[in-house]
Length: 347
Ligand SMILES: [Zn+2]
Image 1 (spheres, rainbow, N blue to C red):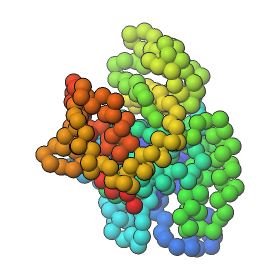
Image 2: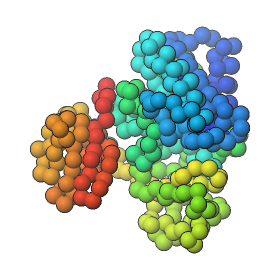
Image 3: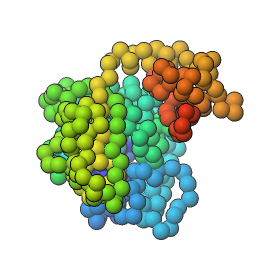
Image 4: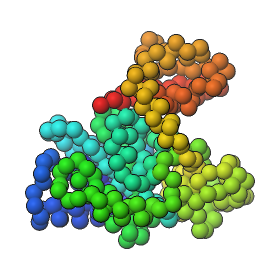
């Protein structure tokens, strides 16, 4: 399953899917499986805006419709199409959510860090960014991942760049080939993606999110792009309070060059592949089940998926270590950190 245009000013994903479907309909039939392509926020796509009332990709949850929010009706339509597909699925379900960014930069992938989604995402030769889903609440990728399916989001490039449609189309074909749905060899697609992302690190994690409010009058300085290195204290934007500086060294991700949206920019840093390996080893050994044996870590109400970490006791192993084990941060207040293990982590 693939969704394009959950943000209405990002039609590239919907265009890419239209191309794929057209070729599938006119060419040889699928080797196996089914393909479902959905346009995300129809009302916002028609208006050419990120959203009408609220960001649909921050409201994805099973909850009652708010009649005053256009996106809730869109969500309900999408959700019933997805539920219908989940019910009819004859095998594993994989979701691709296709996006573009307001700034320039190489394509990349994001996913809720379950082993099943991670294993799938690693088949694509694009940078993968960990930890974005922890910063953003209510995304489609996170929602579908938590329902127990493989879900990966892809950013294809700049909104209006025709190459973004090509990149996203290539990603969809690669996914179909990797899953054995089509016979198209994946090599050429792989090489073309490798060329597009040349120079960008392979694996990264989010270290900072610059949140903006509408009244901030946030404005990125021109010329920044994703995966550009910035230094601590470097001025990257301006707002009502003056200069906005990078709080640390890192690679810039998704600098905001549009009016709608609450993420000014992110900073990401390289992750050593060793940590991924260690994390996989710990998770397959089901180390998360005994994490409450550590000092300063307690289960919440006997729930094996939720732990409360007292950070002054659990200094060195708190957040990063629990990430390795597949926990995500839910809430933090003062010394207490509430974390939840993602369900459906292992195949
Ligand atoms: Zn988007």
